[in-house]
Image (cartoon, rainbow, N blue to C red):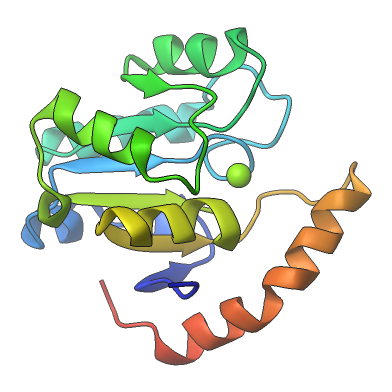
Length: 166
Ligand SMILES: [Mg+2]
């Protein structure tokens, strides 16, 4: 499916208490342009605080990144103190299942948040987890990102029209 269950402006629109109330214990998160912009090596204080708040509500953040630079997801996730899979191959569902197995969670207890329809949302949908779509933090700097965003536009619009509150 190319539409998400929920959509918001950024990860900070996702209330940890609301996720916990829905029975979510594992929040898989795309890294680039979802948690921080491309090229930002470490989590911001706001991301750290949000991750702590998730943990306080019993929700583990787990970085699921397609980034091919081996050090990038590792450095970021270690700084944040959360587990991760790099070069994850989204939208193939394999890395989603691996993450759930590692954390002992079922699809019903798992959500994915990401900024891209054709990787994060499609992969999450194939894995049977709750899909949360956010806007990319920053498109500037790479023309390919604008093209991709344009291709996603109809599915974003449809998601906005159909999305349910979390
Ligand atoms: Mg991304």
